[in-house]
Image (cartoon, rainbow, N blue to C red; front, side, top):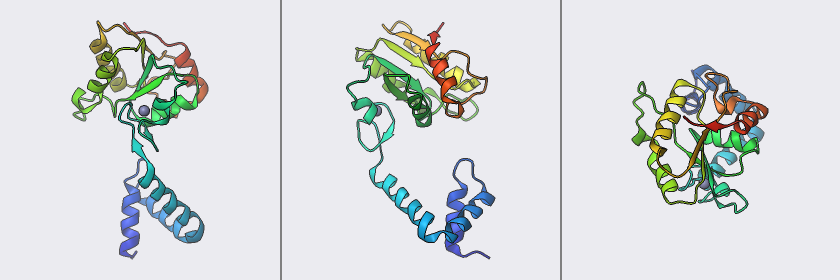
Length: 198
Ligand code: ZN
């Protein structure tokens, strides 16, 4: 019978994406055996994240400053916005180093099944950013899933009549493909071959 502390840590870890109760318990045991090294590092890294990371109020990225490093970088193309579902997608695209503009994180995807409506996403603030002017291109970089594509379609409709070119990632993307699982070459290719919506 494990102690209450170990149970508490195990159940906290078990809620992480990709981990279940069994792998969480294994991770806890692994950490306990490496108390002075890995456990200390983990505690420090977690505290660092808790104390320093903030959400960018412009694009929704997570960084140590607000506005984030991407939004604040004057070398970035200010006239182009790439719309992604999650922060992980932003990071994946930025690792591929092909997109030089700025981003907009929706905070999810439209889903009738999960009850996610346009109001649950940051679509209104995206429209505000574009409405403020100075934007030439909006790249829709949703996942190649049904929900991702529904979301892209919805946003493209909302952008109709606004003076921006709306493009979307080329369908070299595998169907069902999630951006942050793609290798950088595939991602770069999809971005390079982006095409107009509609
Ligand atoms: Zn930002």
